Image (tube, rainbow over all chains, first blue to last red; front, side):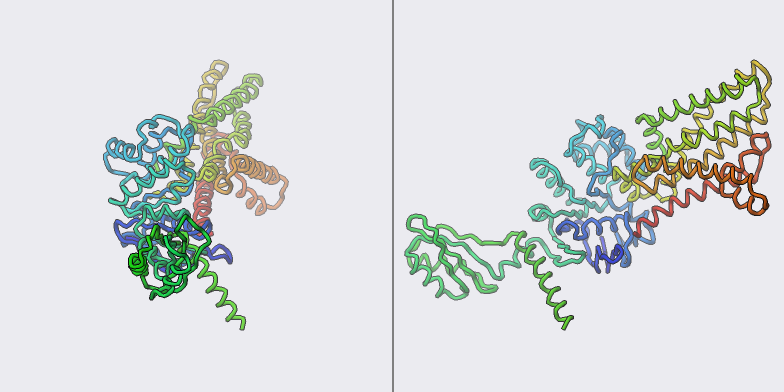
Length: 323
Length: 234
């Protein structure tokens, strides 16, 4: 559906995007993730034709953006970081304007009514946009992107500035939209992509540092994993027995104590699942196991690891270069 | 393109700016009309049109100042620039909206002349010549205003910048009479929208001047398109 090849965007000497290539299939929900200023918005702006790339190519549905920008723009519904709303218009007037602007040919009344229903704007359709709350404005922004029923939807940080209830609503909406559209969404909030996206692309300083299915990315860390185990039994004995287990790299006994039980941090060797053997051990010795939880499998950790790994790699390259 | 034109027209009259323009325009026109014809006891309208043209230096930037600057400030230009609309039709739609309001206001001033007819006859040819001249010159003013508005995100900067350029143009045309050499006069005259005005006010249809105004307008509209084109690559 979307093919991006060797995309470079340079502002003077600064590379906002440095050789970005990616491909997104039809019906996928993809999350672009990265710290502020990583190049997420730049990527989206190029994809929607708002900016032009310094070099590289963008194809949507087989159409090259430079060859036929109008056709590409017709395929895309875009919600920029700040929803592009005219405060002096009512919601209804605004949606009608966008309908005409996009040269939409669907049945106007039915189409706009359906969109208002999907994003739940019916109650405010006669109110001025300048009188709407932030959450409603964001919904009008989403409604605008949906007009014309474009196959690709691009949302730049759709949940920024919303309250927790609205965030959940928007996420549910995105999931619903993902059933019928290809959705690209950018965010710097990790749980958001984890909650909504099937695939995650992590961008840092203009480069893609990870591109994988959400669950694969989460599994990556499980290769070498730490667990927090709470076992009811004599502390020293338990620690020694844990150390003897095959696949266990390190055992640390924490000073925490809860009655008869102690907490241990057990680190496994790479690609070994030690949970079963810990269970069998405890069962055999009749030490009740009260808790076993993995540590650091959320994206937050992966993200930091990837970003830091990248940094270290660059620095070592630099050092080598100097020598 | 029609969508942008319609939105722009609505914006003029759902915000105060359209009314402010109309009020000031009609007040200025009426005042100038009374002073140059009724009080001066003459049916010669040349002076009226000449002064009205100078009034446009301040009035027309009111119409053009927010056309693009406000879009940029409100971030709504992202909607226009990512919509399946060409840059030129976007620029032209906005130009046309400003021109429509201006032409509409000018049409209202036609009502002045039956009054003048009571006191003496007005030469119709001269009247239409003058109106045509005002329309053409206004077109060029608006094109400059559209261009300046695309350069900034501040309405006030756009207005002051446009007024500044128009005054500069007026200065150039005044300077023209001081120059001796024909070629120098020719170059200076082609730079200023004011130099071409006089033939029309005598009731003569000056083709070269009409073409001059139309091409002047076209150049500034294309420059505006170029501004947006360039910004994409910045």
